[in-house]
Image (tube, rainbow, N blue to C red):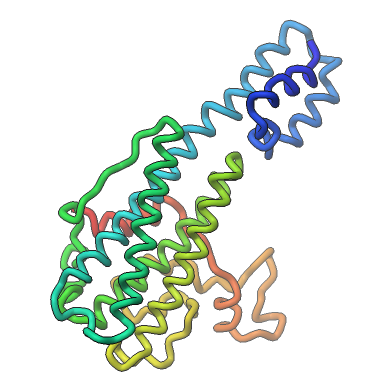
Length: 276
């Protein structure tokens, strides 16, 4: 049995086979090394296990991540669409109208992209409508669609959470480089949304929070105590086991310089507050 020939044949129909096997590349290196020592009867079982991990489990895992991302995008799209449809909420005749419309359009594009990717991968996209959501978060934000600063505060929480959620799933998409690339492209757009919403909150109509920065400072700089879960861990000042303030930087600068990921369970717990 020639493993190299097998891989060459697979590569003819799947040009990404080596990427799918990565990060098992190190294991493959060892496999080549001891291949001559493995009993011939054991080789088919070993190869079968390896490719099952490379294809079967990876595909299911990627679809799961895509549906997770799609759920978040549905929340954001319907949030902005409801805000736009609420008369008198967004100050008419101001740049805020165009900004919210643009962000809404981006979120809808993300929804459609993820739905298409899931279907093309053989999965079934999750489905939500505006009626699926409670944007008061079980009563935590009762004025979200009647008070513009509150609307922007909740928007900031959504965008900051989205950025951290995409970052948290990057590792689970390593086996699918094309999906990973698209996810990181969405991640960067969500980051720009987060920055822009923060700038809008600094304007007098948005609440006049002049001390707010375009990035996260500390654990929760949203001014919304109920949103603390969305900022859990952002006050981390240790990277690669190195205490950053110990190098002479302030605690605030140390937290601002690194964006921390959120785990899937953490994000779903946050999202569940807004899903009926």
